[in-house]
Length: 267
Image (cartoon, rainbow, N blue to C red; front, side):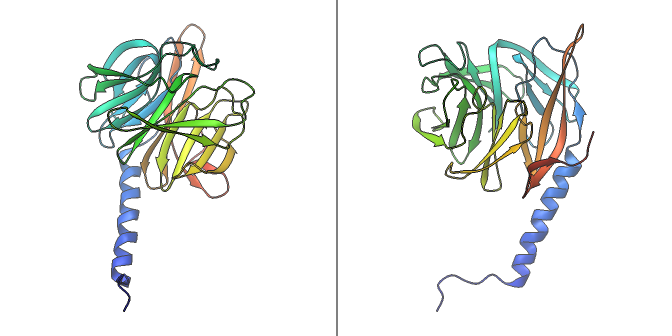
């Protein structure tokens, strides 16, 4: 006798219906929006609580908006605030107070923690293992994953794993080849890790759950990448205008088997 019960057709259909309804709910909850205001520095990352707020890292400020992009809270923060993630009512931001993309010893890498409701700073945690500068982070199943800078000539990227108290667990090597200034954003979705990188063109990387490299495409997710449902993302875009400053928006996107991630609609 098979010790593992075979799922019935009804149970399989229930799973399909659940996944489709989840995707539909994400599509109904989120839409393309502009972040209110203009800022001296460009946007570095985005995340969401999944229900009513989008959080934007503006290099030297953290901004919380509603789903229409209207500012709810805004706080100044030391540069360089990088990519960020939401977990358990708190915002976690990868921060480098030193230099990026230099030999070990010149970075000053931290995780800053903010209250998700008020944006009050709650704590700071050193993450010195990111010797080239902490640039972004994500959360999955009791682990924080951090990424960051990379000196020129390095033919691989590095991913750093921590527990919930920011005790270092291990460094993973991502066999991606060199990407300009390392990795800027990171997100987990549907069995894969996704990484946004600078470049001309910008580069999107993918790895499996164990950080084995599985794909590389020309797509710009380097300043904001947030999963909002099965195979669905918000992607941030920044525009710098002389005399005004930097503005940003988010667009809806989804995974594609051949192109990695593509936008739902063209601008």
